[in-house]
Image (cartoon, rainbow, N blue to C red; front, side, top):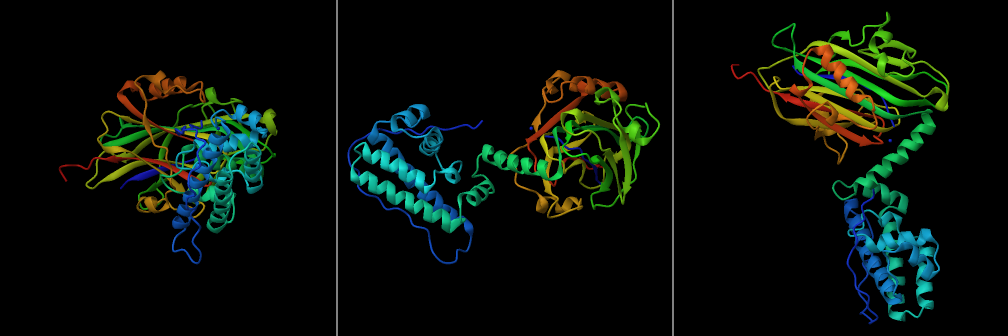
Length: 445
């Protein structure tokens, strides 16, 4: 039987441009065919997107020809704006079109028809021949028609492109998540800078044949934009079939009397004793920050920590996983999830990461469903360098001290663990981030 620990805190957070090679020429190239969008019912929207991207490439070619004919370098936005008398916003968009390779990063941000007509008219006034002007006009019209046929507008086109697996840049995906973050902050009235989870998995000293875990989680730079209580962490344990399992836990920081106080690690909290109310809801507990001052006056950092005893068997008679999860339902700038595994834990394969859709599939934690419920992400875990300071991050300036505290509390050497870190800027809500590792089956069974 494998289990997943479910906890969640919430937190908040380059566009790399490839320059295409081009040559300036004043000769008149022949008119080329401009793809038109297909009409009628399309069996899939991917064909329609291909039409958009084909028409984008023709438009891009025409834009480059106009730049070549006017003798303007499209890679120098300020000079482009000055020499053609265009505003910098339009010049920047035209420059992006000219420098894009496959267009998926800029197709939704091509200047509108009026702006393109202005650019074409400026080129015509500078003496560009009628053939190139006609080509650019046709290409602009074809692109507008293909966008309208595919998505109805540029905004929806951007969403379509952002959801095409493997064809959208990381910056476009992050920009879409940032838009969601901004809206969620306004709607729910909360935000945080960083949501983090740190897990250590190691052989149990008290119960041979079992695995213990240290689980630390928190929000850094949490702000209430409206005065209301807010869940900061959830606690539950489920087996691989989604059934609730009881846990044995001890506080990492033994100060305090109530569970809410015992759960926090005061050294890293600000204020050092945040007001936490614990609520029991079905098969999980909620650790809720009470309503307080809004804005920067109420800026709060809350860190929870637990020592979980005999959480997993060390080996099973069938393949199983040791998994930990964090529910992301607070708008945060970034999430950081570190998973440390002791050298004496027998594992198989690499850490498996899923970002589970909890808007469409709420409250489902069966491992067999994870692939079906997963959202497409380009981020993946990376190995942490050797030594405590290899895990340092500017988003958690006290992090090495926290790792030392965990090492002291467990009596285990930090260097006997190997760590993997997953990070994502502006993780979408409502989702669950899951990290799991396969446990090696008992060869004697």
